[in-house]
Length: 166
Length: 83
Image (cartoon, rainbow over all chains, first blue to last red; front, side, top):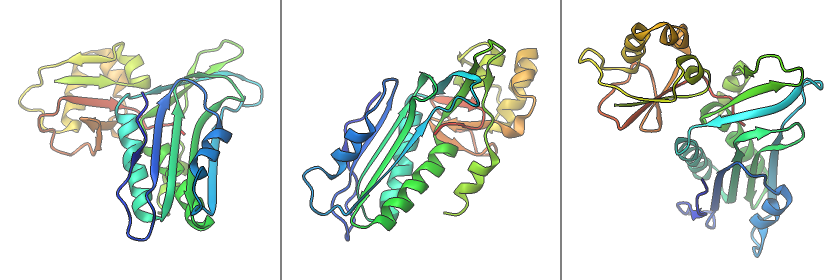
């Protein structure tokens, strides 16, 4: 499901931050998404992006399968984005998270943040990824090339710890 | 009450969704998990470590000791591994 881009609450010290959140099976074009955030604007001085990709885990992985909780996934990411917009003077945010089967080398997640200055864009991007990993309802399952039993990826303690710095 | 299961919780139980009449005694997610465990070996297996199970009431995260209230749906799932 895809949400229409909507304007977040306007901060006193920032222009409107267009927000685009999409939970989708199909691939995305990172370059196009990055370009779109600064398109037609002259107030954006920094665009920071993070693309999460599927690793082959030393050649052992055939594919990752991502399950999600439709509705809640989008709602939870919206809440995390709202927190980021309230915290940093952002000029735009895009979050795209795929679900379904993804082969090694494929895109999983994209976070793009735009701001007048790089500090806010970098910090907001890290904040979004830290909370997305620990709060957005997605679960990864590994399919192995040797056909052994599929396994659910275990949550990493380091991901929980990463949220504590905020 | 609609109860949803995800990831390995869903796999172990063998179903993604149930419509359940909860007993009066169930007033928190922790009590719900305890009651579900009595429903058979597949539930016993899904909830063998009840403390790690995450809960959402109407698609919002809650702690296991939160009041259950009267949500449209309750979801029980493992720790999340997205991103």
